[in-house]
Image 1 (cartoon, rainbow, N blue to C red):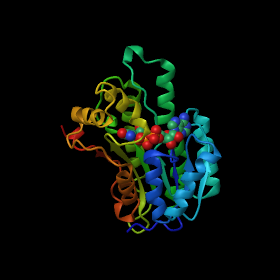
Image 2 (spheres, rainbow, N blue to C red):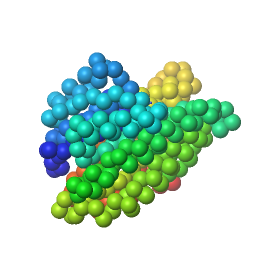
Image 3 (cartoon, rainbow, N blue to C red):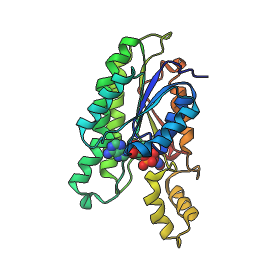
Length: 267
Ligand code: NAD
């Protein structure tokens, strides 16, 4: 059992989806949660309440748009002024599908800012204090698209490959911090395949449309192409993995990009 009593986690994009389920898993182990995402205070109330109910001694909402690196800087400064950040989960991310030829430059830059630059800014700010305390966890939510490519996803794939590479650099730079007893400082990526959240709804809708609006058939169609298990992941399954990474026993697991993809990248 991972005990995070007395620790605090900043989880970007945690008002919904994978971020909320990772935050819920950490809250269940007793961590205070800095909740974040594109929401106003009233929309953030329900996820904050859910995290308190799950066991977080505190769940406070921080509201910054990560498409601007200044927003990422302000987020991590404000969260660190609230609590020492022991666990940083860079989860906020967006997707837009179009061919390379049709992808607007502004969309490319927006995706890079949110999916990659924000993680650079938050890691740069949070890691030195983790090293001083001898314990820290950075968990970056990359994707199978940090390991393999698919058509129509140039900026997304670029951002996620970048996130995997940058996480390895950070893992090396902080590998010697702390000790087995304190838990050390680790930096890893989780690389999900298809996981049922709002993020993939447009792609499900497009496939469902080709099956006369049958959503289940649309999901089956998406899975059959790439994910050999033919099962989506539940976001809570990623929460369980993130929680395990936070245990001191995982002190030597660093610089990894862990696929949760039903065999997609094993092919
Ligand atoms: P989601 O759309 O449900 O959640 C995305 C989160 O990011 C939201 O909380 C949103 O508020 C936040 N966000 C988006 N734009 C933002 C901005 N400009 N500023 C601040 N916050 C912003 O999607 P999800 O599926 O939960 O995705 C979470 C992460 O998982 C993303 O990085 C995504 O790339 C990755 N991922 C998802 C899947 C999947 O199949 N769902 C697969 C692989 C990787």
